[in-house]
Structures are given as C-alpha cells and as structure tokens.
Length: 389
Figure (tube, rainbow, N blue to C red):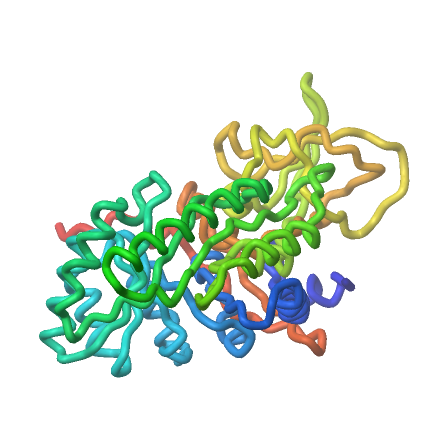
C-alpha cells in the first residue's frame, strides 16, 4: 500500500479499514465452506464497516441497545438482525419491538429474559423467533436444565417460536479437536431435546472462535483449519447451520498508524515515543509487549541495526507496545503501521485515559480512495465534571 497519499491527507494516530481487503476476506472464508452454511457477523468486532458488508453477510449479531441503534440508523436489513446479549433490559427491548418489523429474532440467555420477551411479544402482538443460547460454563447462556424449562414454557405460546440453539465457548481456538468435541456435544443434546419434547431444532448458530495470527512466528494453517471445520459441519444433517464470526472476518482489513514523536535512550536502552499507545492498540494475547505483531515502518530506512522499545503517549509505565524491536534506522515523524487491527482495537482500548483524543477512522474503498468516517474526538469533555454550582 502507498501510505504517502494517506499520510498527506490525514494525521496520525488513525485507523484504516481497507474495504477491498475485507470483501476478499469474506469471500475467501465463504469459499472454504459448503454453500448452505450461513455467516453471522458479530458487530462488536467492528461497527464502521457494516454497510459495506451487508450484502456479503447473512446476519448481524447485535449485543447491546447501542449496537441496535447503530444498525437501525444505518438502515440495515432488519431481517438480518439477531438481538443478542446477556443484558436485555425492559426499556431497550420495548424500543426494539416498537422499531422493528413484524418478526423479530432474539437470543435468550436466561429464564428471566424468556419471560420478558414473551410478555412484550404479547403486549405488542408481535411474533418473535428465539435462539436459546446454551452455556459452555461461563456467564453466557442457560444451563441444560433451564434450556429444557424454556422449551416447556414455549410449547403453549403462540407468539414464541423456538427456531434453534446458539453456542459459543470462546475466541482464538486453534484446536479442531475442541471444535469436534463441542459439535458432538451439541448434536447429542439437540437430539435429546427433539426426542423428549417432540420438536424440531431447525437452526444451529455456532461460534467457532476462529483464530487470527497476530504475532510473528505464530502462524497456523488456516485453510486446513477451515476445511476440517467444514467437514465436521457437513456431518450434521437436517439443520440450518450458521457460523457466528467476528474477529476472523474483519481483523486483517485493519491498520493502525502512529508516528514517532520523540527518540531518546537511558540505562535500559533506546526509546521511541509514539503519538498513539495502548489506549488505541489492543492485541488479543499480547503479554508485556514481548511479542512482535505484524507491522511496517514508513518510510523504510537502511542503516545500522539498533533495538528500540516503543512506548505510547500515556503517563503510565504500562504503555509499551513492543519491547526490543530491531530497526535499521528511525527518525522523528516516521510512522509505524500495525496490522490486523480490524477487530476490536477501535473500541476496546482504554480510550478515556489521560483525556487524549480518539483517533480518526478512515475507510479505503476498492478504487483506492480514502474517506473519513470519524474525525478525532476529544475525550476531555467526557472526563469533565459538569456540576451546577
């Protein structure tokens, strides 16, 4: 990529999301699976690219009222909405009922949620479809006992249709054996429910937690991983299968650009200070900045190799991005481009710390044009105590 055009137009720090890369990524993932498998995008991974991928994705998992507002204000197809999340409060769900089409699709994660959704369905005379989320042992979803209780409750409810089961046990799961174990368990449990309650569980929405290689030296055979997962899914008969994926879809389209603002040395080595930092850049699995993520330096320089530790602009010793990075040469205003930041980075960092501005967000379209979709945002207003005297 030619970063000069981007850097001549926009200042750092910034995020760049490449839409052409994103579209290619989605098409590649879909090509690894049977055509009848659907793909649900977990929008918490990145909300800035939703309109651009709407036609490529079969559904959007929405886990909060704020996420619903984003999707609805973008006028995304409501038939693709799956209203999920552990916290479904009365006012938010009431608003969703009032601002959606006739049939609404929800996940249910507790008996209390089921009762709330049932009551509102009756109040608004609106039929709803439910995916019951089965827990993997954490705070998400319901136990097997509660799952059966919800099935029992729903049998006489005209406004409720149980359409399937949702299951997600974690992220960055590289073990296909773990996926096989989970899918075998789910198939056995679904068969048990169908036989006991004389119903059909049509849909299985499964979150495999497909991994991304963030750090140099941690690559894995993704194509083989997808092939094995597809083979497992193909053995599940008479069910509509959806894969709920976020990180794996969107991570590789994202870049974070931050420039060198100061260079110095002390008894512990050479230091580069950047205008970004840990408030903007979050890599899943990074520990004490010891691992090296995929990145580029711009411009590329030649010279004697020295090792540098890259620090951000926060007033905390924890704001370290990389330790002992070998560089041939580096100067103030050089830019580092961190890769694979398309998922979570723009929302997961400790953005309010030190009242620094939120970075710009830029989209690069298929013609190579850059579009500003969010300018820098001051956070000092958010940290200011507005109290009437």
